[in-house]
Length: 250
Ligand code: ADP
Ligand code: MG
Image (tube, rainbow, N blue to C red):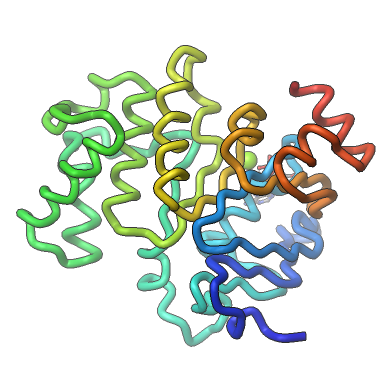
């Protein structure tokens, strides 16, 4: 078997991934590849290991076994500079995790300045460009508490984009939002996908998965039960467990 690090053109290459918390094995052998520019949605019931898988992609969780390679850097190599590698992986969480005491602009510039060592002017230029990208031009001086949940999530997306990531990870980015605010966030994600961003998205938004994802993975019990083109997995699932899940959420 060729190792993941030798396969060019892949943004994410995961092989034989296991993750246990104490005696509980949460990921039980995941193999997953994402090509550059591909949008992959991960669906599945609560507790199936979706967040843990996403967190293993940037090593927020350390795998118990297996390899994780992102843009040809093996993150599971003990000698790798994980902090440097992580700057190339953007992550957006269900809870937006903005700094409540910083205004929008400073939320977006702080990691650019501290981690990427950008000057303030460049960081602000990048922040303003990405605020425009998420439809929030002119909101730089607002405090997070003055924004709707959907706007806060779009700030979180702008913040992640400002690090110039190679890959964007989204963990149920719209699950905490009031229904009327979901569309704006999904529209931003759809635009990113159209621009060619490599995206790995855990979501319960089946319409989004169907329309935007190139591929869909269905997870249950710590394994990928079924995967394929979004139209196939959502429109014509082959596995009983996928069908049962979809009948509950569609
Ligand atoms: P999903 O995102 O699909 O809902 P998770 O990856 O969050 O699933 O969780 C999968 C399982 O792993 C759950 O049973 C959860 O309780 C367990 N789990 C997740 N994180 C931890 C942790 N840090 N310590 C112990 N158990 C955890
Ligand atoms: Mg989760």
